[in-house]
Amino acid sequence: MDEIDLRILRAYQAKPELSMVDLASEVGLSQTPCWRRLRRMEEQGLIRGRANLLDAAVLGFGVNVFANLRIKQHDEETLEAFEAAVRDHPEIVECFSMSGESDYILRVLARSIEDYERFLKKVLLHLPGVGAINSSFALKPVKMTTAVPV
Image 1 (cartoon, rainbow, N blue to C red):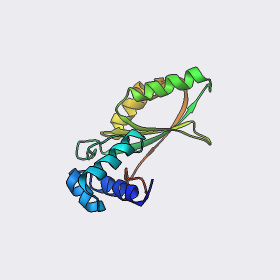
Image 2 (cartoon, rainbow, N blue to C red):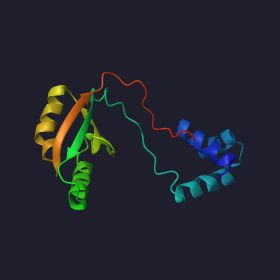
Image 3 (cartoon, one colour):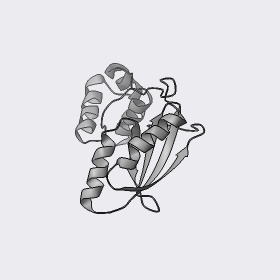
Image 4 (cartoon, rainbow, N blue to C red):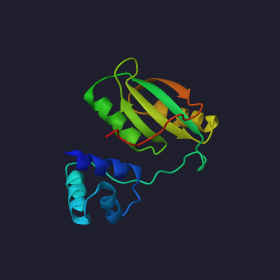
């Protein structure tokens, strides 16, 4: 990957709405070489996909919850079952396997604290292998980005 590839990635992240002509112009290439480089980076897995970002709060999901989970059993079958179950719940927007005191941390979107409480009781506590959950509520987002610092 050279400096031109990095410029393409920076511009592509910052302005995903740019047409190929405008992206090429922004990075100082003609359209075809820019397209080829972008295509190569997609094939290499550097670009995983495209998404439109929605404002969760405007859509009524004003509560961000960070749930630290401990798993009772650390065998492969339990962990894989837990991870598969997490993927089935759209309210869980992020899940990370962790080192330290928690085995996983989840970011859950909820409409209210009561909504999260219902989700905790009906879903989270029943996920495979869950032993303990410690939930924290975000007061406000200070920085949220999907940009990778290239």
